Image (cartoon, rainbow over all chains, first blue to last red; front, side):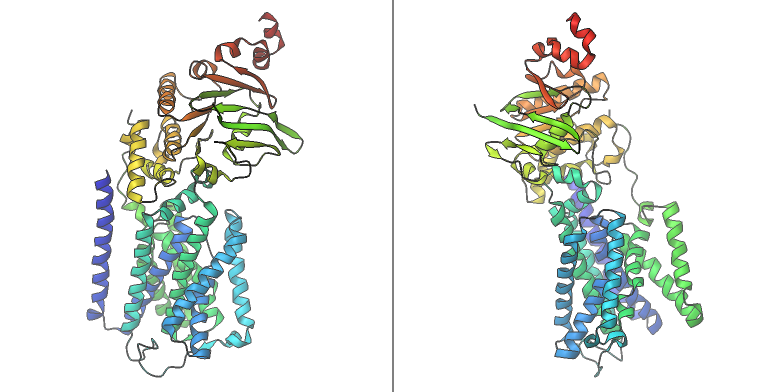
Amino acid sequence: MDKDFAARRRRDLIIAAALATIAALTPLFVKDVVVQNILILTLMYAGLSQSWNILSGYCGQISLGHALYFGLGAYTTELLFTKFGVLPWFGMLAGGVVSALIAMGLGYPFFRLRGHYFVIATIVIAEIGLLLFHNWEWAGAAMGITIPIRGDSWLKFQFLRTKLPYFYFALALCCLAWFVTWWLENSKWGFWWRAVKDNPEAAESLGVDVFNSKMGAAAVSAFLVAVGGSFYAQFVSYIDPESVMGFQFSLLMALPAVLGGIGTLWGPVLGAAILIPLTELTRFKFGGSGRGVDLIVYGTLIVLISLALPRGLLSLFSRPKKTGAAR
Amino acid sequence: MSALLETRGVWQRFGGLVANSDVSISVGRGEIVGLIGPNGAGKSTLFNLIAGVLPPTQGSILFDGEDVTKLPAAERCRRGIGRTFQVVKSFETMTVIDNVIVGALVRNTVMREARRKAHEVLEFTGLAARADVLASDLVPAEKRRLEVARALATEPKLLLLDEVLTGLTPTEAQTGVALVRKVRDAGITVLMVEHVMEIVMPLVDRAIVLDLGKVLVEGKPADVVRDPKVIKAYLGDRHAVGA
């Protein structure tokens, strides 16, 4: 039994390594910039959704306000860069730390809320964050921040002539989020989180520190999402409140996980691989006139999935459990 | 011999309702004590007070020589109070072994150790064959046993069993009784709430009867079942006269 378990863990790791290798080789064949762009976004959202999944999937605290951490990552990085000349690499770390701290600060009052009330609180808080940045003159207010581009540089993590560095960073982020999840899944935290999600009262009776479990999940989740936000800011080289903290980011982090399988190791990756190309392609195809068509497409998808496969696409592949009574 | 668990003048009020009034009981090391009483006697409330789900309105709870009245449930678990729930609270999306690992993590920080401990407990409770099944796929009797397994994995000194034998078939109940004995033989003190008198009475060393939130009678099971006050509480005045 233990061998089965260890084998399953190793198999996951091997599959992940294989997929990452294949992904790393795609730029050799895919030269089209539009397609590369879609690949970058897909990898980024896979990583973001994987990070969202830690708090909302494993620990069961559904957040529809993760756009806040995404935006905080973006803003921290760019404010440090444009105002103080701090390199984006450090800004990225700073953004992660700021977001993790804010997530814990917010968790302190809000983790006392349960179910729908918690979800509502996350939406409201993210909207408040959006409004604050809209009105914060020093941070560019509604005008946002344009990142000065002075040619390709690894140091400043900006590239004009090629998208490949962005591609590899997005891949690395996705791998990092996956690996962190894989690692935490078989740790005290992973078990605590799932116990808290399934039944907090029972968890408490078994010595689980429910409140700190949620705080830990929130911090890890917010940190990784903020790194994604920093990356995105560098990638698009212009940020304003709506373009890095808008509600659509909260949705785009949640939906891949929900589509693929919430609270599972592979769900977010699978979901993102389907959802993001689909939305990007519809957006590309319908151009400016079709704004919102992508939303209709994934709205429809989610409705179909929640009706037919409430546990996500992954449940199609999960091996049937031996449910026959043993006695 | 100092008692493992002691409640001193414990009161619990819910608004105008008094669920426990001035309850003082003690449970000695190595005992199996039955907490019985008619519906609404305050058994479950007392259980929750001991487990730390809520603090008592008044009074104190001592465990292993220390005052634990103000400690939260998780901390009491770490001190050595394990419990099951009357309405089973399995982690439904997790497998049986994973359910038990959550408990085992209290005393084992290394995952491999926790997993080994969990397997050991599953073996002990007769659930080993079901280790990789989702908790939601267990039949009710197995779910009750999983509750016990999970609590045992925390390596408690005191195990609180809340109606683990209720609602089982006679065969299942006998298996349950055997398990409780085995738990005691492993050196764990047991305090159990139970409804079914004919199952619990032969099992316990001592019975405490609660009625209307108060301790009515306490003593050897054989004496308790013959006590007129107990018969009255369960069956009403008419029967008590006959006794």
